[in-house]
Length: 77
Picture 1 (cartoon, rainbow, N blue to C red):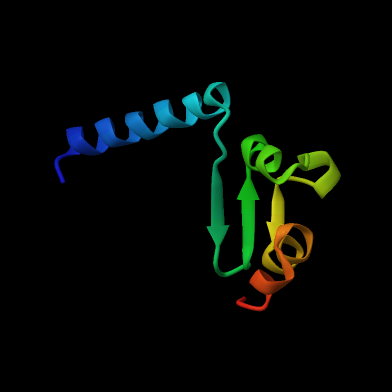
Picture 2 (cartoon, rainbow, N blue to C red):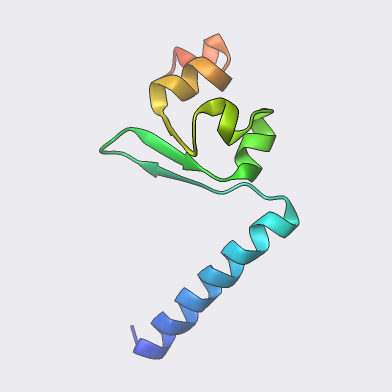
């Protein structure tokens, strides 16, 4: 990959991240080693929660399952 392409790609990601809050979009990341998600406020709004009520912007998979997933979906984990 050409260095300029890398720079354009990184700049595009930054611009997209800046657009998330104003568009009301949710953004999440999953850390498979820690089995934990990191959410922004948009994701919490989709769940009908707040980061404060959930204990922060990071949530383990087990806690996520017990908090927001339907029982039949939990069984799939």
